[in-house]
Image (cartoon, rainbow, N blue to C red; front, top):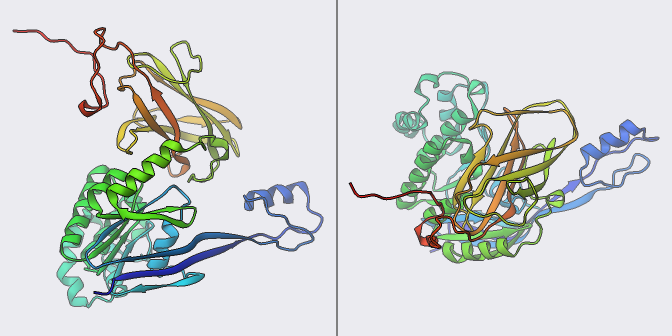
Length: 415
């Protein structure tokens, strides 16, 4: 049987460059630097283009009914690959064969017309997918029920929140029976309950013999959903195989990574107006320490640099994962009702933890800085956290890894 997706020698190149005016003033120079973050050389009004290969010589195939995960760090080329497969952008080199209709969920609002209502966009999207009107009408009620937007179905989607947008977009993509369903990390916009609902739907889609390509930083979701996984790194296909094999390789690479210098990290997302440049662990006396111990008071210090002052309502988050990218703990100022105004170009946020209850192990720390509407800086696996043995219970006994990551003071009695 021929594969339903076949990718051969696929490459995508972008040209990066802007024009520098004659006799550039300080304002012009600064503006050019901001517009061209790679620091391109420009003289006498000419554009010196820099080539950037988002993908290079990618080869793989997917059979009908397979559920394939695509993983890799930010900037690995995952989203570019999916945009080519979804026919949103063309490759520079190579070819793609797709046998069947493709339903894509790549970015909030992709394929929707903002002036049209939710109802009208369902029919528009279905028509783009090649569905007959009767087929769309047959599934219409199920789509609306799944998206949970029945009250707003006749409202123009430009008035939808990002969560409403993504709920409707996923419902359309999954229910109009495309042979190939492509889902990017956009599901992270939805709440946790809706994410679980979407994962369940993708699983049922696969059981019906349809094909799913799934990009996610949630490696547990990839493990649970995908039979096979592709690992991308800096635009190249680094490995493909069973999901367990590829995740094991990916975890080993994360452990071996030496690029924890946040100032030089390029695999980050967000507007860049505010960036975390260093994460430091502090003990109870607020001295920098190389590791923490369970049961102790401690602090996380996040040094930042800002492109501009006057940022308001800034929220700060730290995610702590085990070495298989299972989320263990989230520390987020939004949960505690705290936000900050940034009025200096340099500063630091400090998160105080009265009692660290993590079992001794090595953990991976991700950071998030954002305001009310945007991510300003997000770095996955930004640092390692070492938690070392201590006499937490005063007995010399500690649970092993199979008994869970958390420690909790407790006592027993007979009644």
